[in-house]
Length: 470
Image (cartoon, rainbow, N blue to C red; front, top):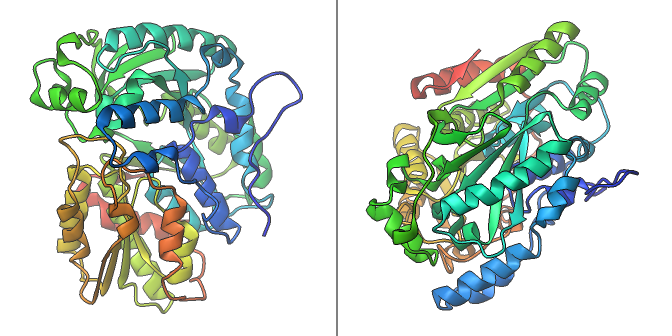
């Protein structure tokens, strides 16, 4: 089986796409997993054990130092931000997919259920942006204003060579822990369809093939300078609310202590937009460009607005159950994936229903519990809780994950490899493959899902949760 290309190096100066896009970022993992599934391959080569696995029981300062050293080996230097070419990143993304005609394409915000949906449709998934991390020498977890100053200078360098992107800087010690003081996290979002995407759509789609655009509709307070760079303190994925990042918030003090910071130094910059789109939103220019391209070429465009990740996860899980049953399978075996722990091909091979949790926060785990409580029972439930590598008051404990597994009537399994050292350990994506390979075969795969059936299922399964399909 041919392997997915690991890099795309252009003839001119600059950085290869696989050097730019942050290792372990959601979009990177989802593209890799989707491309492999469409090739009939699993994710056994995705992710390797990190040095942090040796420091699970170490004192917090030792573990934080090890984490900073590990991220330092893969983050960009400040000077390298001037070498980032967003168009080259787009070429690297589309190059990962097999060179053939496709019946549709899924674009937009990163979401594990979007990858599963794309695989059921037999189509690629292309993100509307990507993430990168850059060194912040002498940085500090508890200095958001200093992070803004440093990030603004980095964004200026990046935007100079990439005028068609927006750079969102996220300073969130609740989701990144001590790494917040070692690197700056930048979410780069295209403000139009990159040329590589346009060529891909023109050359690789069947005539009249539909385009599905997914929007993460969550909002967050932010500071926007109006020149292509915006800044937010905290993020929805933290499992906390914006108010929890106020200097007097008890949750913030716990987060900063765990990350090696001091709440007395925390002085966030004043927001200018109380409710702007969060870091994984889709730029209006990207949406408009997709609409113009589809209107000009005769390809139908459908949009799905996702108010919170659980809505799409539940709708796609219900969609899979119905699709599997129409293909003659039981649809009664569930796998609850989390974060980077997913494998769409192994899910298909075993005839499983996938439910994807964005992360290990209590809110996300409570959502799967509510969905399971209102669903027809499953005979087996396998749970893969990704350890976030940080401590936070917003995280779900192992008893809550065990409660999710407890919904299985005959089989109730919480992966021990994920549970070992939770929540501060690190587990590679390939752990999901290793676990799911133990599931019995349930082939052949059902006939490819049609877009019309997928949209009907999303409307039926997600409308009550606010999923808007148009």
